[in-house]
Length: 275
Image (tube, rainbow, N blue to C red; front, top):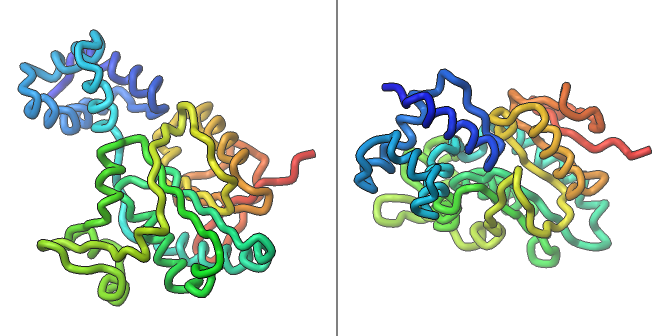
């Protein structure tokens, strides 16, 4: 099924302007798969009519629903495993440096349904529990999609979601059965603050971060957008902080102001001192 060219081109442009996400001309199937549920739910005659209504501004909520539906929300607990092992090592290095202030801030910059920031919280609970009583430790989790953030705040996951990357012992220790699903315990939930942020829009005030996970996000941006986002992240990352990208992402051709650090099976980036 194809979307008519004028509506498809308009949607591609809107998506890029509002979110930075680029989709190529072959992705008609993706538009159909993600927007047809809105067509059916709102009883709109066709996909083209839906996009025309977004263009006309008929319903202020419609554009937001369409943009949220077009976002990719693929995630899992401890996704790719190695970054979370590296996070543990990075935190172990940071703790002595932050001993005077007793404060750490971690940012999950595209948190989706919450598995990534909750995995960060589980690393803290499993390996740095003694800090939690006396330190101020914050995990700020942000996403573009308000409905996805609402799901993340619930902290409730299906068997399929918990089976993806979550060790059975961790499930037993930190989750409780709830009406056929699994609810993450309050001590983990309370470590995470969820906020709405459009990475290519106006950011609210952010505390300086010690660690930023910007993983599997820039794959969907063009090079100028990647460079702009990385530049903004640098301004909210402490000079000795660490930036984690996805396994298929790189700073090559994007921003040469970072040192790549290999740690186990994972790399992360530290900002080079400015001259």
